[in-house]
Amino acid sequence: MRFGVRQFELALMHRMRDLDAARVDDALEAMGATRAELRAAHTQWTAMAHSARAPKGRALYRMALGPPADEGARPVGSLTCDVARWRLPSWPDLRFEVLLGPGGEVWNQWFVRPGAPKVLSLAELVPWGCVVADVGASFPGASHLEGSAPHHWTVGFTHEGADYRARFVYGLYQRLDRADGASGGGLT
Image 1 (cartoon, rainbow, N blue to C red):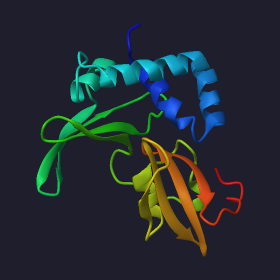
Image 2: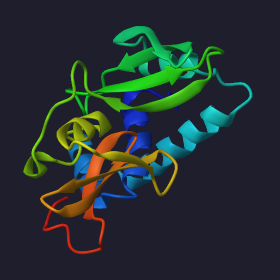
Image 3: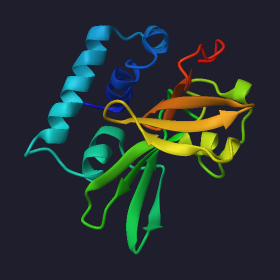
């Protein structure tokens, strides 16, 4: 089976299901996809990513997604890394970014917003609508924390005296939790 954009989106959603299963199920229905297709896409992507015969680095993403929408260089400390970004139909306002080290190895892969981060209120944190940089720009003093699984990310911040943890998968916002374990006030 050819691995293309649809399968790549499903592979991403497989990990997103960890934090927001209902949203992923809605997306599957909208795409006309099944959970079996979701699992198959994840399995195929994982096998390709670890295969000795499959392309590596940028070439693997080009094989699945075609040419990047944009490419460039980014200084990271004393190094200059390559960056490639792709548009994905399920998230048209964002880009899937791959940061490549000097040897071409993938250092990071996640969603970003083209241009400047969007400044949002707490009520405007909508799942699948913002990225890590948006939350960092929206809540001064936000801190980046490790996520609970591969490709998960957490941003901690305080708003009106309450501590929150914004949960992300591949840099895409999934849900908001109160840090003290209290209900997030219906926030998702």
